[in-house]
Image 1: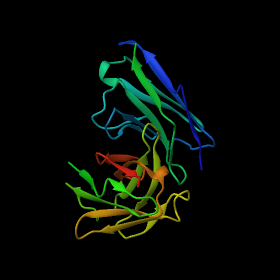
Image 2 (image 1 turned 45 degrees about the vertical axis):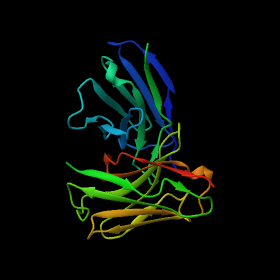
Image 3 (image 1 turned 30 degrees about the horizontal axis):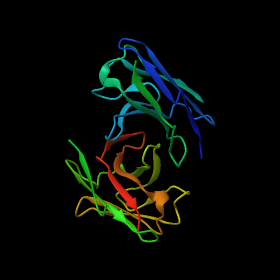
Length: 107
Length: 118
């Protein structure tokens, strides 16, 4: 299985801050990388697909970049409603695997 | 708007079989554009892909669970189902059904917590 390693595991930031989360794959996954947001008690929601494509209806403050083994997820200006856990997921190889998650809190 | 809804027992005894059904509304499960998936999340932990089924009935199961998992599809009812046999406490989790468009999961059910306990 491809291992996905996210960092940091948790993050505290202020409203308006730029927030960055990284995800590293254990092998080259080209750009087959997605990012999801999960709010407490809710199902995950797709934010970014194919490493950098914004899912329809998702605010433009969210963005993604990277290819190969190293990927980055960015929130350009943190909003209170962005409090959630964020997961990366690879779909290059079955079984599809997720990172362990990054829990984002407001400072 | 596509919606998915899980249903089934919330409490299962150890060694028994966990059975869940996902009812899809707002779209046909027979569409060849999607895979229909099950994903689980133990309390306070991360996400694990269980497997998926295509409208034709072809399946993929995570090797970590393959010996215990069966996913079936009923196109006449617009439903697909999960059976997980010989459960233990480690199978306690929120189980999500989901639509996979082959590049990402774009619709999820609300999830159902299944507890394995005697």
